[in-house]
Amino acid sequence: MARTRNRRYRFDMAFVVKLSPEDTEALREQATREHRSMHEVVVLAIKTRIDGDRRAAALDGLFDQSAAEDAELLDRLAQ
Image (cartoon, rainbow, N blue to C red; front, side):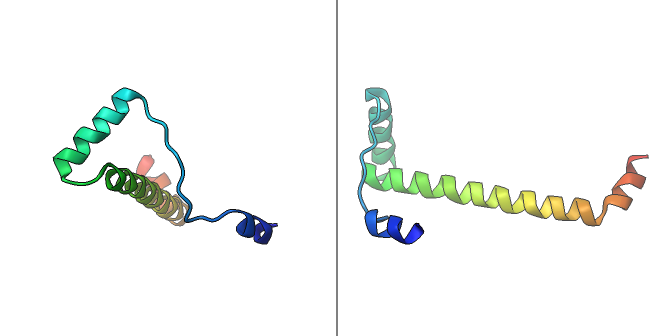
């Protein structure tokens, strides 16, 4: 099924994001402050959000692994 989906959808396609007038103006102002295009600001914001979520997931995994490995020590420290 994934192969059919890959043929049907291209992942390098453009898509439309509809913003409120207020959000559009905020985006325009941000782009001006950064000397970037509005498109570039949006792409960077998306990448930043995805990278942050990936880092948080990785840290959660490390915490869970550490908690499991050190459960006995954590129990003793809690007492």
